[in-house]
Image 1 (cartoon, rainbow, N blue to C red):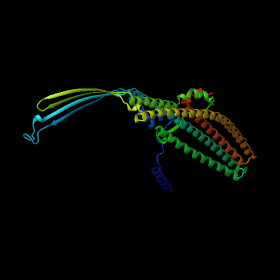
Image 2: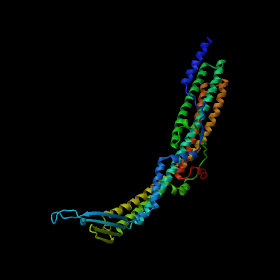
Image 3: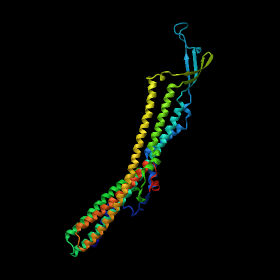
Image 4: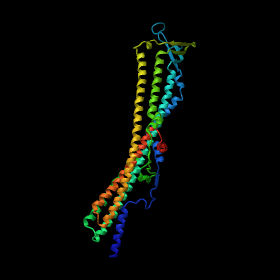
Length: 447
């Protein structure tokens, strides 16, 4: 009998070892815990962003063109060579192959054309580089703000998990108290079953929030170029969402920072580019153009004779049709001037929109901070109400449903407070973007 039990135990352990996987962390080292700060996240996103890499390529191309302007003045150079053969067909001795019938030619040429719009063309190349530089800087700033928003959102979700775990702990403690009370006959079965339902509900809410957080964190890590957390270890976000009141008059902000907004700078660059383009169109159409060409030709034959010729040409062309109203050239000049006027109108519209955005954000920040004060007070009152209600429940003067209602209101008030703080922080980031400022400097520029 003892032998049979021993063999049965050996068989059971063998099956378990055969079918059970190796548990990580038991025979292997546990996966590391690594800290992810906001600065590291922004740095990783900047290095990983494909759109930013494409913008860097465009910037490099524009910079190369801006530092190599001499091709605009470089003449066109050509060279050529030819081989020929000639013989009679019906006269003389007819067609025959003779060395004297062979001939060859070589040539080289240089052509230089100078137009009045050449200085404007050089300036347009420089403006194109400035535009690409502005686009690259703006792309980096927008990426940093987006990463910051996602990072703080994840921090808020992480804090929400802590709140849900605390809620679950409270529900489990209340269930344990109800169980003891039920066993001693101090409370009814229905009350005990309700505490069990509260525990299961809290577990479900925590599980759903944990799944959503893990999914969002995984997507964020992929954006940064990191592997999944299950492969690299546990990721811990470093930092805290600390907000302070930011109040100031929007008019000084508009006066000081409006001109440095990227959209405003871009519109001014657009006006300058279109004005330069208008000047280039006028000069290319109406100014005289100078053309210089040099051509050398050499000819030789199979008999050994060789001759060459060097020729040059200098010409000045003065266009007349652009001075006549209604011609195509005249209409092109008019269209270029109209494009400049439209760009100036677009600039005014952009400035008005930007001023309205700054005023709206500053006003919303003031009202949002007042709402946060009320939310903090509501959370403190809800917490105190729950504490007193729990004491009453233990003394038998409060029903469980009332206790559950106060606990739900307390959890809801804390969630509203955290959501309000996140919205306030994101609004600060939006205002920093509207002023083209580093969001870290907002505290120094605030109240």
